Length: 198
Image 1 (cartoon, rainbow, N blue to C red):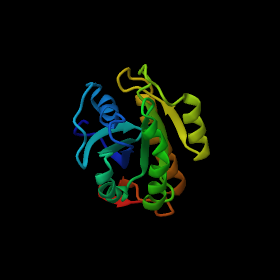
Image 2 (cartoon, helix red, strand yellow):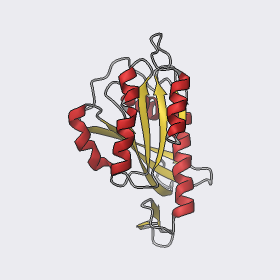
Image 3 (cartoon, one colour):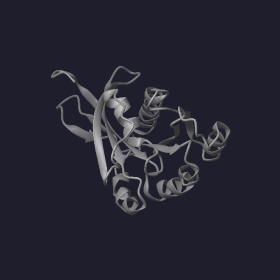
Image 4 (cartoon, rainbow, N blue to C red):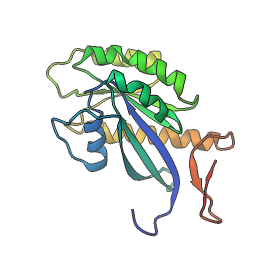
């Protein structure tokens, strides 16, 4: 980000899903374009920032929160729903349990997140030779909960940028259609440069 670059919006996106589904690798591939086969499990949360240009030409600073998937951290993760505008919900195609647990994550989202939050479903690690969840199963689950769906690979950089582009686009569209209804997306006041809620 350059010194004179004007940031119009600030969006918060959570990455949710069971432990070891690849959330950290997915995030680092998007923000740093790097990949490692092994990461230590996230403890509590980690986050990164990325500045993006929206379709209307305006800049948005996106806060990307990588949350722990272990059961003992799920109650902690609930507090991070506050102020979130989007959620990337992820499972590992080689881990059937992580797919089955998507319903539990959706239940938590419905309980904790605001009503107009944008959610997309990611089937990660499609580069694996040990797939236990078919594409059709993922598509059916996404259709059931009316979620946009991507099969992806952080390792091979398949649908990583596309998934983030989609959810950022969805968030900006919600903002444009709901900015007079109290949605908590930050924009800068052009007159005095101060932040305000729109």
